[in-house]
Image 1: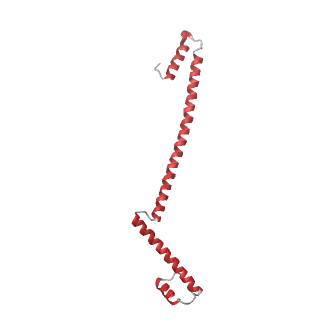
Image 2: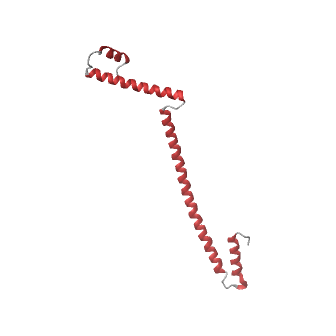
Length: 134
């Protein structure tokens, strides 16, 4: 139990010249600790108002908010990395299919067909793969 300011004054006024009892010592210690806590709180509020700094509670809220923002940003970066890996895999698959189509066109150019149609189709396929109009 924390003594009031009046109780502390009474205790200090009536103990001059004699030793404190254990109960008086405990009461005085509790009162001093409570007074220090009150002063520390008012000092923080005064400094915050004077210096324009937020109080520790506000600072804690800001840190928690920044942490949440950083975690959201990290989640977005992870999603981007997953998408990039997916895009990379799909691009590699597309390149493999295009290489297979070029291989097929090269093979088809050697087919024996009437009027050289296979060679003509192979040339057209290569043109399409190269991005030219057939």
